[in-house]
Amino acid sequence: MIELGVNIDHVATLRQARQTYEPDPTWAAVEAHIGGADGITVHLREDRRHIQDADVEKLRTLTQIKLNLEMAATDEMVSIACRLKPEMAMLVPEGRREVTTEGGLDIVAQEGRLKKAIGRLARAGIVSSVFIDADLAQVEAAARIGARVCEIHTGPYAHAFHGQGRDAESPAARAELDRIRAAGEAICGLGMRFNAGHALNYFNVQPVARLPGIRELHIGHAIVSRTVFTGLREAVREMKRLMREAAAQPAP
Image (cartoon, rainbow, N blue to C red; front, side, top):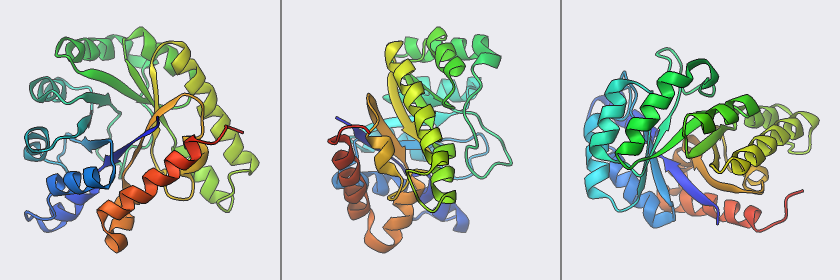
């Protein structure tokens, strides 16, 4: 059954805007859990722009929900993951000037380094994930380095969907969705878990949630944005309902 991982980075963004102690991401994780989230995602960036080390410590010790730690594949971050032991660690590309992650990890160009990082995570008992574009060469490279999960970058689909008047049937949106579908088939065929995320919202999520073999969607900004008006529990419940409704329907 399809699952929802809620990214709570932007709860910390709001806190850091005032350099204060609230809102607390740990509280957000509990509210999301009550609302139906299956997991919590946080990105501990090298520049600590939102989530802080203390947040990850608290989430690991004070919450009872699956934790997915997004991180760059640096020695520092891998060491933090190996110490805290989140259920899953997802390797992502990271640029200091980007607002958010802007593309998938180029595994092909750095297989040796990434294989070493994934080996360390595996020895610590942590499920390893990689955030990649819907590119078959990257999927095959993910399998070679030992990744157990591939999360496909859905940003190009989301931008095509929005740019074509929120029309999931537009040629541009269909083309991007077909790329995600093909990548998902390759991921499953190579024995890895097929996840997806980035720029998904309440309007574009269902075509992705209907894709065959998809296991988990990671969604953050849209849920935190709706939370401003509805509260976090209700925002999570509505996203989960849309996903489950779509997953129960046959793929077109």
